[in-house]
Image: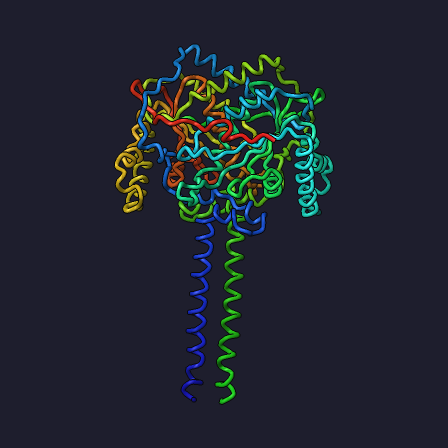
Amino acid sequence: MALVSALTPVFVAVLCVVIAFIFKNRRAGESESREKLSPAAGSSSRPWVDEDLEDDTCVSAKDHEDDDWAVEETENLLHVPYTPPRYSVEEMLERSQQFYKLLNQRRSVRFISPEPVPREVIDNVIWAAGTAPSGAHTEPWTFVVVEDAETKHKIREIVEEEEEINYKQRMGDKWVHDLRRLRTNWVKEYLDTAPYLILVFKQTYGILPNGKKKTHYYNEISVSISCGLLLAALQNVGLVTVTSTPLNCGPKLRVLLQRPANEKLLMLLPVGFPAPDATVPDLSRKDLSDIMVFV
Amino acid sequence: MALVSALTPVFVAVLCVVIAFIFKNRRAGESESREKLSPAAGSSSRPWVDEDLEDDTCVSAKDHEDDDWAVEETENLLHVPYTPPRYSVEEMLERSQQFYKLLNQRRSVRFISPEPVPREVIDNVIWAAGTAPSGAHTEPWTFVVVEDAETKHKIREIVEEEEEINYKQRMGDKWVHDLRRLRTNWVKEYLDTAPYLILVFKQTYGILPNGKKKTHYYNEISVSISCGLLLAALQNVGLVTVTSTPLNCGPKLRVLLQRPANEKLLMLLPVGFPAPDATVPDLSRKDLSDIMVFV
């Protein structure tokens, strides 16, 4: 008995180390599998917010495959000759200047006219966005175009409700006295007035023929690139938008729009003609020497 | 003494629970602060790989501010009228169709001609990329354009060396017998032959006047959008590229190109005319009904 008592401290120490070790490994295993299976988790019954704020590029960032976006599925496809249009040096200079001028006129506009926009034009800009490259050619994007007034208003209610929560959470922070900014954030009239709202969803995983989930690596980068093409296409026809990323509204909006669990809202773009009295902040862009380094 | 012995099991149990609890909280605290401080960590002396594979959109995803990319710094700027060019319905339809046709001709091309491309054209496409919107107008992009043959070759060595590591790590995986794919991944001749390599870096944080670091929220989404504009600008002048995201080569390439710690390589784009014998996999894109949902 005395022996046992004498050994008790050692016994305790060893047991604790063992338990701590087991505990550590269990946690490590958990977080790892959570990473690996995050897309799958999207379909579980976890709270919306956990599910949606999980950024799937965290998975892709740890993945070393397909780093040149090699089109795995198409490696066995026939390769065909590729001969795009060829322009003279003069044409290239002229076209590159004109394209820059066009894009440089683009501004984020929050004052959008309710006047209608031809549906065919919207179809064409979505077609254009769909030409973006994507990891392994997964084309992991869904563009939900909302024209229905009632649905637009429900979207506005969800977004503004979320803004209110953000605002209350922010009470006392550096923006609390910035009423101007507050107004800007609080009221999103354009969600009602814009003839179309384009909600861009990233498909974080796909379903394989065998029913298993397949992670779409680089899905956020791919969908963001397609949004770049979308912005260019809109500017090209004289329509305006404002790029918004209402990540915290994603779950409710996804439910409202009946999108599947593998789709996460990446951006919300109100689209239309600028209001006659539309204004934009008088800001400038960086100079070429500030964004380009030549080696 | 007998009492102590009798209490030993209880004593052990309580001690272990306490230790496990402490341990759990310590780990939670760690991971939390790691998330919050990830951009700052970029400048610390942690191993390159840890530093670079850390995806900063994980930070932005948890941030609820600037969710409509409100231009904080410019809230106090004068607002000026905005009147972009206005087109007739017929013009809009025509322009939207032509733009879609242009972009739909774009393909990722890995066979690039060494023939020179006018530097002014490259300047203009970078100008165009720089017109992208960005969270709080931070313009968090740096485009490193490499024309120097020696530097291009060093870049190729770094990328192919990394591919070799990936390959060895992959031994035995599903691609091990896919020699075709292997060859595609292994040899990146275009890194030598393309007249220009454009390495796109995302600035994960900026430096405030007071010297403190300022996280650039949505920097990865913003830079990806600008890459979309860059791809459109290249296609518009008849140049080709292939979108690659060599995340695992980022640290070495950043050192080679002497970029600061707040810049992470997001994409590497070889740019030039397609080789006369260039081929692309014979794949097709999704139909509009597969990427657009109308409400």
